[in-house]
Image 1 (spheres, one colour):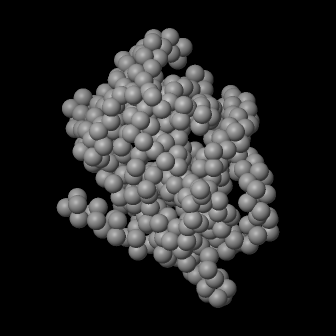
Image 2 (cartoon, rainbow, N blue to C red):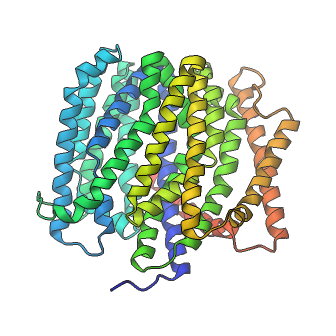
Image 3 (tube, one colour):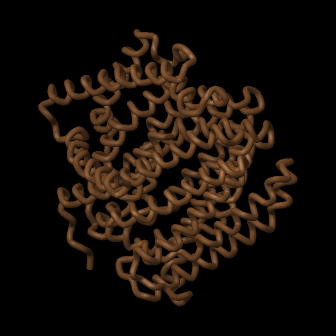
Length: 508
């Protein structure tokens, strides 16, 4: 028996509330991470960041070997029992143990291959962190299953605070990369403890219901494995061809350039995965939800990405200092491309929710087949700039492929999609043109003093924001205040504001 079709307004409200909590969590953790980065870049050397980036990239890749997506499989079950939860917990423990053993076993040959002996102890420490994560309380999956992301907000933020605080303290004392490793370990321990204090469920080790979880999980494992190869190949290849310092510059540049993706688009994935499951269980069409979300995400991500790209020079100099100016062109390229990544993220949430991971696997495999040869070719000839261009080209191809296969399935035409996106595109073009006329687009900052750099950055951001906001508002009003992304975002804004206010008061 299928569930009754959910009320669209009610489901949209739940998505808005859930997204508000997720964005608030990302906002809080990003501010904590930014604070940590601004302090750590002045206490540690770029080579420290590069070494840890290599270690975490390798550990994450190995982790994908056993990432069966048990929690996602648990969420997709129409009904669950204690056996299914306990089996998911048991599989998580076995996964953590297996992954930790593999990371520890290959630590020495990996360090030898990358010609970095310090990597051995780093990988052994990350193996311990992986094992710790395997014992987290599976009961926390209910936060996503029932779209109660308020509790997940607390789970994510409090452990992050503990990790950031210790990382800064250790950096002041040790002045080396072990501060970063110590922060990772403390974050994992804090999250483990909190998972048992925030959820009343007390899991027991079991494997009785493995058949209920393993089918979807195997597909999820394959997707996760190929995705890790796609996402981590750049660090490995740069570390092999260039130096750990280059790895750090590229990683930091990509991280800053990808802020629109990580802070605005990826939070939608978690909420949409749950929402698409609700629609799928009710045999309801996801067409309207898909279109509305694409439009809203585009309205935010497009100006955010282009804005970061336009002001990358003063932003990097102010945030990271003069030692990191080599990351400026990486930020410019990565930020510009991050503006369209919502097509892949939202489509993947849909295919995961309906259990069609075969399509996602095909798409990710094509992405790897394009990205790695392109990365190797351009990296060898143009260094870090070539690597950034290769990643950008591969990402654009990803978006086009996802649109090509998803729009027909949703019964959405290219003209209808363009009609949803034209206001944001026109407003962003106006922003770029306005800053370009003022010689503030992709240009070096004025002066070298921190105060003058900050003022230059603030002026550029202010002018760009005003141009975009005025353009979008004028076009929306001219269209008769249509029921589009602008109205949807006006519904999310008060909810997000309340979440941030709650977090601010909690900190005080």
